[in-house]
Amino acid sequence: MIYELQIRISPREAYDERGIIAYLQREKGIKANAVLVLKRSIDARQRTIYVNLTVRAFVDEQPSEQLFDPIFYPDVSEAEPVIVVGAGPGGLFAALRLIELGLRPIVVERGKDVRERKKDLARIRSEQRVDAESNYSFGEGGAGAYSDGKLFTRSKKRGDSDKILRVFVQHGANPNILVDAHPHIGTDCLPRVIENMRKTILSHGGEVHFQTKMTSLIMEDNEVRGIRCGEQEFLASSVILATGHSARDVYRYLYYENIEMESKGLAIGVRLEHPSHLIDQIQYHSNEGRGKWLPAAEYSMVRQAAGRGVYSFCMCPGGVVVPAASSPEQIVVNGMSPSNRGGKWSNSGMVVEIRPEDIMPSSLLTPNNIKSADIIALEGVGESINPRDMQDDILRTMLLQEQLERHCWLQGNRLQTAPAQRMADFVNNRLSSDLNPSSYAPGLIASPLHFWMPKFITTRLQEGFKAFGRSYHGFLTNEANMIAVETRTSAPVRVLRERETLQHIRIKGLFPCGEGAGYAGGIVSAGVDGERCAEMIAQKYTK
Image 1: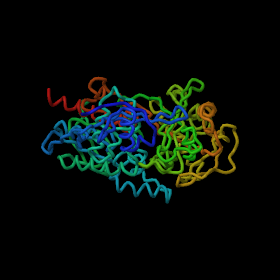
Image 2 (image 1 turned 60 degrees about the horizontal axis):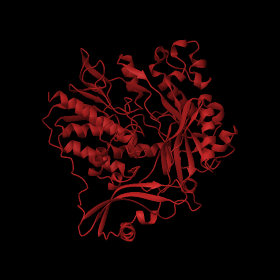
Image 3 (image 1 turned 90 degrees about the vertical axis):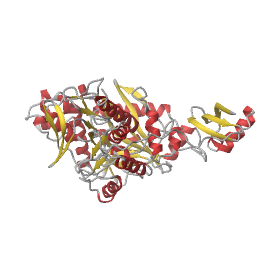
């Protein structure tokens, strides 16, 4: 006999099959010989912590070893080709779905494969050298491969997000991601999973080309015919453009080619790093912190400040802050966690919502005042801008990102040393005479973020931090470092496409996809969007 139940038990019992079986016999009178956990979430709202479980209990039966039916991938070596630009989550899931539907993906990726890419990331940490084509944004796996591996999404209406998790498990991810409310693979495990996905593409007739950068589209009468990668051409009547939110050269190319885009909002701020034991104490309401049974604590915070959202972003329990610039003269910070989330620090982006209308319209600018006035939010910080870029408002959000990143680089002595400030000092407009120890490998330099960052951002962060400190006693503390600058929260533009067909509104056969095109926000939602684009292309060949 099989029972399916929802139970609420202690952490000590919840993470041990024997504890769950003992609970079922004691509280429910069910003498199960085995249990299968279907869903798991932690309830830490009160001082006594519980774990909510949905379990399948087996009495005199054994559970099936197969969690789900694996996806069948046919051989597509002779099938119709489809070009996929970018091997991030959007591109990889598009390629796998194309194979599933009987089409042959040709994946081109400007960066290196996931193993070679790791060597370039090590050079950023040790030598403070950023390779513009192989970094935390570019390379196999995209920005998600070495940024954290969180798989939580609220985009349930856009597609089958559970299928994305099953594909990950089929390629070697821990099956726990099918169970946990906030699933997470970890940056130590995700590269192997990505490598297995590439092997599936290749073994079933697809192609993957690394260090192959798209330089232009091949078009004829507003129809895609393929792409150029320097002197090399790839020809196909459908192109999935999944280049990620940091491919600014792609945005500039599309802009100069008059391919329709629009400016969109994003969020900008800092990476906030606390000792992980402090976050555990706050979230689990105990001086002992997480104890033996609980995982490193997470948090999610949001407030309104002067009409704009202030919120935590990409929270990394037990993780590290990483240098995520995609060009040598930038400082960008991000966070990541290993699968065990066992590090000394926990970090999160703390960002302020910025809308296009918050940035000075470029039509108000002339070449004579660009340097001193460029963007209202910067209040005199900016560097000179190419006047051609400022003739239209489409790129203005991207320009704000670029200017802040370069200013951080200048603050950091033209290295990857990041400007930082203690949290309470920032709120009280004080310079930090020294900084806390940090996971950020290139090092920190004390800097008055409250003084030189845009007031539009700093005043709202200060208001948000005060509110968070009132709600979470101990959160607002000088034990936390604020590290600048967090800018890559989402794409600064949206590449316009038809709602029903997902094709670009003017270019037939061009499918803007995923986070870089402005239609996703994370690994799972990008994967879902990649699958949807593949399905729209497949419909062309089944009509």
